[in-house]
Length: 505
Image (cartoon, rainbow, N blue to C red; front, top):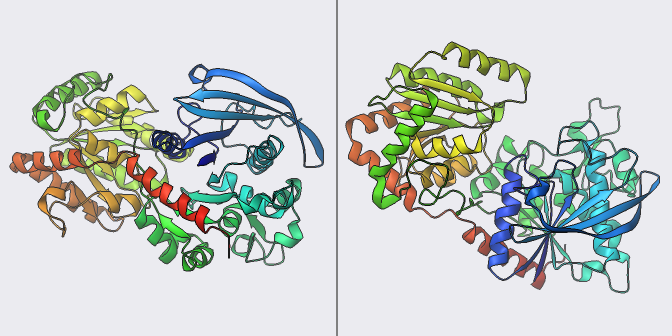
């Protein structure tokens, strides 16, 4: 079986968030299971080129039409952690992928529409069609549309007779709402596709008199053979709550066909391993939990916290509204009121939020029980997971979440909101129907400070008053297996089903 991943990211060479970890982690697990895997990426100028092995140009004359231009595309190959990658560099006057970053450009819609067209042209012109095209998020939403509306009829053998599309939704907060002209630029018939059952996003129109915008994620859902999200709970939420953000109808239609499921993500089991982690002061595992204390001491020394018999609460997070920034700042104050210590590692893209946390950092700069690092530091992240007692994840919504999975791997007990993948993986110490050996953290409902305080109070109290029970939560979390092995097995089942049945009905 041959799988081709199409995505805007792949860790570690092109990573802006969890999508990069997904492509890298799942790709490697599928490779280990004996599946042939290929990753197709835009050839960003900001790629971490030093991590690409045996890079070479495969073709410098891949021609295709886009936005009224005849574009030439260079296709290069290379190995990234054993994964075979193809890097696509369309030579447009707009220099689509020479912007110094992956996202955040005013013409992102055109940039990734061009990538979608280039990727399919490469597969078609090189006669390299895989069995499964695994597309991800709005940036690749046009791939299944182009496949059905254009490439399906090309060549001596119909592409749709053998190629199936699996489309993964990582965050419905970003759907790719664009003007219909983007469809035209990609070589599609916008008038034909701008209907509510295809790509027309009526709810996205600014004015009822204006033509609705196109929704690229909606197009990906409608034209794919199978759709997944990154946790079972998030799949339930996007069907039945406001988390569907307007896509509840098309997702319900997919579910009615038996073509929609939530598959829980994993984490890189090798990189996040307290037994072998080169960044931490003391290696440890579930059988040597007492050694974790050395990491707590080292973390306090690095961050200038006092050496005290206090619980250490950590936040490692992007600082935006989805992540519950109001609850994060409230929890820091509450933790110190309850005689705990608090550390934060994160940054915000929104200036107002960044300024707010800069003020908090300055306010607590001389406090021996609090430290904020605004930015991202990979080494420090590992040290925080290894040294902290509790990890706070108060997200307003969370499709999957990796923070709580990594925290448990390091014997750091999570305190989380009951949403998405957090609810699928963290089971409350006190209020849970699970057996005692499966309980691994503290969970709160709603996004009000009182509910968060109740969860934190229970967590801090257990640490202080019943350390043996707290250590049991640590051990339970460390015993859970959240590698990519199980998700890879689930995706292989989906792929096999598609290849046996797969035609869109």
